[in-house]
Length: 91
Image (tube, rainbow, N blue to C red; front, side, top):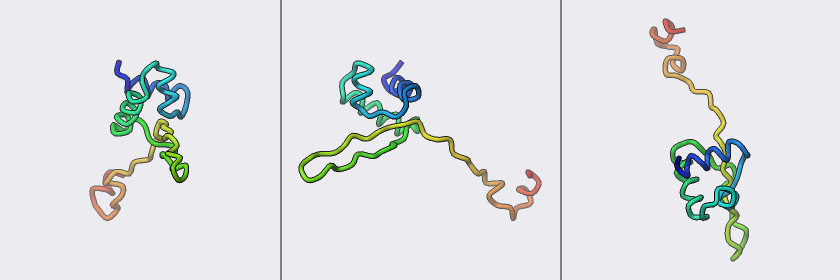
């Protein structure tokens, strides 16, 4: 399995986590964890729960926290446009 899949599995079992928690639990480097988390986010398997926030002047940034995205209701084109005869036939 890949590190990206391991990160997604860890977050699905233990809840939201940042890169440092993932790196410590999986035994990988912090850079590998960040790369895997960003890959999973790009693929749509994770979302940023709390984006990285500035801590103040010269204090750096707080790490981003990732989680599994919530299921979203999707509207199909047929039901979005009720003016169509085909949409009425599909309903």
